[in-house]
Image (tube, rainbow, N blue to C red; front, top):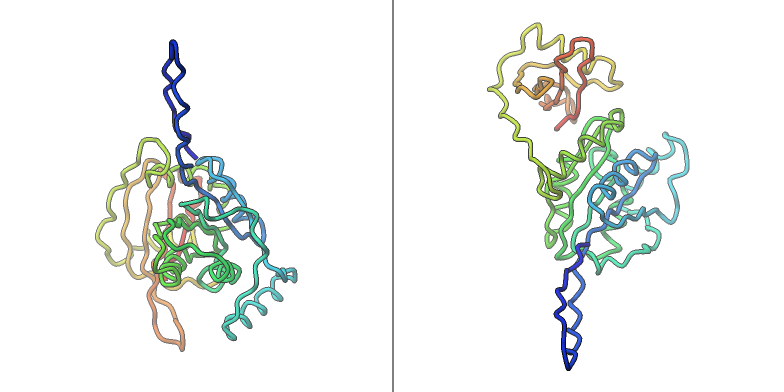
Length: 272
């Protein structure tokens, strides 16, 4: 929260009456759910770099089973249209005009505890900046779902990072906050991607090096576009794969290939 600087003038014979206190400036809150600690790391970075308050929320009945038990419960909740009840918040949301809302991606969108939060609190009229961690992707889908669930809330573009890359969040969060105009700094203007063209053997080699060891199939790359970064080349591959009911679907897979050939390319996100 930015405090107002009040200039005081000296009085000689009679002291001037004290000015009426100015209303408090609405502040920012990092509000997040974290199951494994990855989202928490990003939440702490955002709080440190913005000076925002921070609070982690939980659910009344925690997801305290193993991975398979958590998946099974989540599937059951989604099937039944139920959302978990969240634990009471300590912060008074009325004091904040901007909420950085953090969550892991489960089944392509924000985890069910976030649905529980949206049911329990009023975010009408506030600005929400989403951030998330994921296995392959989900920022875009979850942001769209937030907009649908909160039609009277301003949802800005957010930040997402693969859990496998979360150690790189410190640098990326800083760039995101600067480029979004949230904190001061020199913005980095990125070039546009080139026009997408059929993949070459070199493109396929980069795709396989970045995605070949991922536990889930990401499809077969058919098109590639690229742009030069300061110390790497970023690619966006269009890949074909099987979607729901075995229908052919196309996904966008983003890959960063460092100029240093000794450093392995890595994929940063999938947009379905």
